[in-house]
Image (tube, rainbow, N blue to C red; front, top):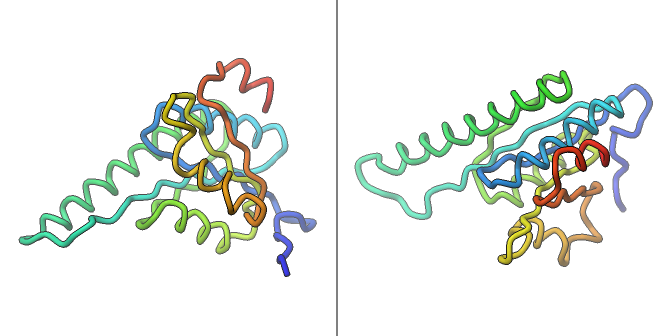
Length: 164
């Protein structure tokens, strides 16, 4: 049985979740989410996921690498948060997690029942839309707990504003 999301109940403000990374298309997804949130009265959550080191290294090098990756993720989220403030006048909720991106995404959605829409950026390159979009569009598409908006990376800002 699928549990109904709390964001649909009276008195709860829905949240849109945008995944922030270092891809060129990420800014397009953040723009769409910010503009749409402003239009419908939702709030926005920006998620950055740090991939843990694949192996343990000696003398704390792994810990330093992890700290650097977390700092980079926080910097990306801060830049996206500034864009949200400028575009929509909203103060975003910022979340940084460590793990596999798809797993951390699902865990956050399960933990916060006010999240009602996932906004992802899709690459327009010849390598495909990106691993996260491909994974969600595949076998899990029919079972994902919330709707997913996929923003193509080739859209112009004016087109995104009109769609939002």
